[in-house]
Structures are given as structure tokens and as C-alpha cells.
Image 1 (cartoon, one colour):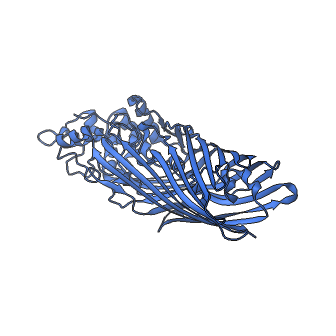
Image 2 (tube, helix red, strand yellow; image 1 turned 135 degrees about the horizontal axis):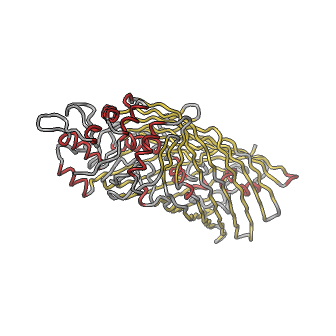
Image 3 (cartoon, rainbow, N blue to C red; image 1 turned 45 degrees about the vertical axis):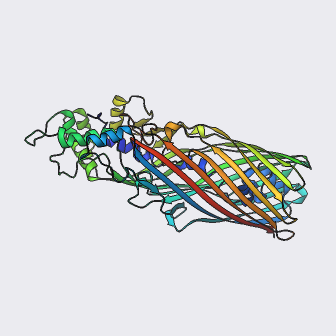
Length: 553
């Protein structure tokens, strides 16, 4: 017999809010990709010592001091995201399917492949919105204060802009049927100061909108739910069809096998819709640029982190199976049943509630060199550090006490075996992540092909900040690599046209029972784990095209 699970409502409640938090992992994926600057993209983002025009606001604000007169920059971005995931039963799951062929079946996921069907984004005032393509138009302007040896600037850029949707019958809907994640910097007052003929400093203050939207079907197919289903079809009933009464059966057994409240380990337990927004999140950048020699520039930039409380709403529509299970829980004569009846859980069908989460945006440091190898060839090299270790845990808070979760918290304390950690209670949830801070590097080359035309290529291996035991499909980021190319064309004395193409690729292999966020079969895995027992393979590809025009006004 398979092991017995903790009550389903416990895992449902923890899962609901866990699934609202892909934002931080995607920020690592999208870092610098959707800023919209073709020079930075084409050089693999190795531009700390070779800042790119007005977008130096982001990459190194000291570079603003190199701009002359009054300038503007208009940018266009187009992106396409392809995400595939394959699901193959591991040895334990294959054994379970063979042992209970009439009870355990998973046609939606077993042996299937998930693919992204379209694009959704989170937009100010509009919320989670499906769009034909991932496109954006951005820009900025600068003004040289000549007698003060400084340049003032502001710009609009997207440190993070990703979204997707899947068909309703896609096996990936348990990790998001519709997802939109946006961090849009809409105002970024910045200054670059010429400290001397060779030394420049700069700073920028960034005002950003943050939005997260997520709709998905949720399921909890741990091996433990195989035990529920098996008990309900066999262990619940005597030969005469009557219920075999014991404390467990009194909670989980329906009155008959045709009862729609019978739980199945692979069915959707609930459909969840959620949107979270914060109109103002502030960060700052400070930078230094030193022209050591005509052939060598050195640069450094620090980008601050942010700690934001994001408010929103969650709607949870429970399946008939879950409603029946909770009704049976309320009939349990034990202390758990008494507590359940006291807070009215026998009436559960739809939950709609305000909620908030405290979200860390990690700080970032980059140092770089720009080397003139020959009169026509320049090489840029960057070394970077991102403090993704701040995502050790995510804290979710409730505006009003959730008494039902308080009851479940007591059950967690009894069953916890230390597999996943975290905490659950009436006032909120603490969900473990355990990410790691990473050092990465990038390199780019620029070749001055003619007096007006420069050609560029870049390479950026982005590393992997997610440990093997925390991988999942919500944040499908393994070792990630960016390949890029582009050009700069000096159209006229004051006008530059630049373009770039970037290709970002990442793969994951997640063996069965290796990740507490995807494939674990542990009895105390209270965090969302939709593909328990499966071997998973994910492949993520992102294509980005950017073009800009910079001139004077």
C-alpha cells in the first residue's frame, strides 16, 4: 500500500500561493534581455566599460558623461519564447501504474509534451492580457549641462518582460495556463559627471511598475494520492458495499464509487486566477568609468536590490472532488473534524481573498574592461555577480487571519519530517527556495568594418542559481547561454541606427523524486509538486530582436 498523505486542503493552500511566485526566477532569466538596447544585446551585455548611449542609465550611468548636446533614443523590441517540457514516468511511477492500471492513469501528462501556445503579459491598468506577440516600444533622452561638466538623462526600459499561455489540454497548465511578468522602469532620472578628462561617475534612480499575473489548473499527484484513490475504490468498502469505518476512512471515503467527490490523484483539484501589482518600486544604480589609456577602459556598476510588498487578489475554484473531501473532513469525529466544523470548511467551493507577498529583487555588481585590440577590433569583457541567495524563502502575508490555515498549520507540525521546510499558519506562509548567488561573465567583440558600419557579436553564459533539488517548470532555468550579433550604422553626423538579434537557450533535466518543487514523492512535501514521480526535461528558447535610433534634437 502507498503511504498516506496529509490532508489535501493543506497542500492546496500551500500550493495556491507558492504558484504566484515565479517572478524572481524569471528576473534572473530576463536580466538585461529586454532593456531594448541593441548595442548591449549584440555584445552579450558586456558593456560595463563601454556604456551604450542613453541606456547607460541602466548599464553604467557614468557613461552618460560621454554624451554631447541634447539627444534622444527610440527603441523597438520583439521577442518570441518557446518552452517545451517532456514527461516520462520514473521507475516508481511505472510500477504504480502497473500495479493499479484501473485506478492510476494520467493521460494528460504521461508521455506527453508541453508547448507554449501564445503570449500574455501583465500590463498597468489592463492586468493580465493576451497579446499577438511580445513587442514593446521604449526610449529616453539626455541633456548636457556644459558649464557643469554633467549630463542629465531619463529613460524607459524593461528589466523584465515575459509572458506565455498554453492550450487548456496542455500538460503544462499545472505550471501555468496563462502567465505574465513585468518590471517596467518608466522614470529614471540620472546624472553623469565628468570628474576629469579620463574619469567619470554617474548615478540613476529607477521608478518601476511590477506586475505578476498567473492562471493555472492545480493538481497534487503525489504517490500519496494514489493511496487515497485506492482506499476509496477498495479499502473504503466491505463486501456488502458499506463503509469500513476507521479514522482515515471517515475522512476520505465517499458514500459510493460513483460519487463525484471521489478524489483522483491526477485530476485538477482547483482552477486558480491571480493578479498582483505594485505601481512603484524603486532601485538605484551607481557607476564608475575610467579611461586608463587610449586602448583601455575600465568600468564598474552597482545596481541596488529592492524589497517590495506586492498586493493583489486570488480566486480559487475548487473541483467537486476537493469539495467532497473537505465535506468528509468536516464529518470526522476527531479533533481535526471539530476544528473544521468550527470554521465552516464543509461549505468550501470558491475562495476569493486579498493577499500580499514580500518580494526581494536581488542586487547586482558588474566590473568590466573594454580593450582596443587593433585599430578596428575592440573586445569587451565583464565579470558579474547577482545576489540570488536573497531568495532563500518567500514570505506571504494575509490582511486578515486565515483560520483554516491555522488549523492546517497544526497538522503540518505533526507530520513534518524536514523534507521541504517552510511554515504555514493563520497569518501567512513561509515557502523555502534555497537559491544561490552566482558569478557569471560575458564577452563581446566589435569590428569597425567601414567608417560608418560596425559589426558586433556577443556570448554570455549566465550560469545557474537554482539548485538541482529546487528545479521546476514554473521557473524553467537551468544553465542558460546567450548568443548575439548586431550592427551599428553611423547614418549622419548626429544619428546612429543600431540593431541586434539575441538567442537565449536553457535546458533542465529533473529526475523523478529529485526536486521538491516538481517531482518529489515525499509524504511531507507540502509545497506544490505537480509532476510527482516523473522524469522531466525542459527546454527554453528565447529569440529577441532590437532596433534603435539615436540622434540630437
